[in-house]
Image 1 (cartoon, rainbow, N blue to C red):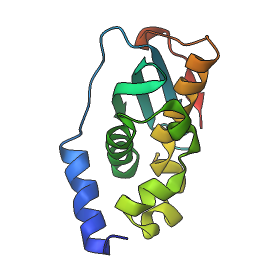
Image 2 (tube, rainbow, N blue to C red):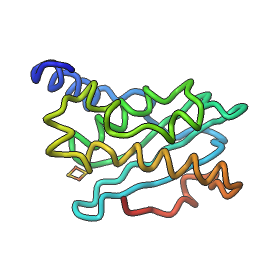
Image 3 (cartoon, rainbow, N blue to C red):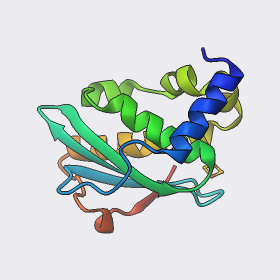
Image 4 (cartoon, protein in one colour):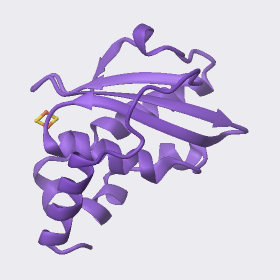
Length: 140
Ligand code: FES
């Protein structure tokens, strides 16, 4: 588990320099998630090959935790199988963002993860949305 300062530094670095940020051409599945309490939004795109996440990206707006967690989560899932993604919970985020954040801001931190799981589920069900413009915003 990172120290409090290490977690803060990582969160601020991902917020200031988000990884894998931006729209993806021709994604295999897209999902948008919103925290209905505050309005933060994260839209995620997946490209999937043989049941594995070849690449992923996100766009969004909102609090430092929701946006840095999106960057961290997308980084974590690239190269993983869809089954691995579906098994993920807040633990993998806590390992990087610290237990304090996960305890007090769990909903902010898991917004992107929930959107990614929704995109993966849609893909598995054959109902994936493949355009950011067409993705309905789901409340998580
Ligand atoms: Fe909105 Fe964090 S305050 S998700």
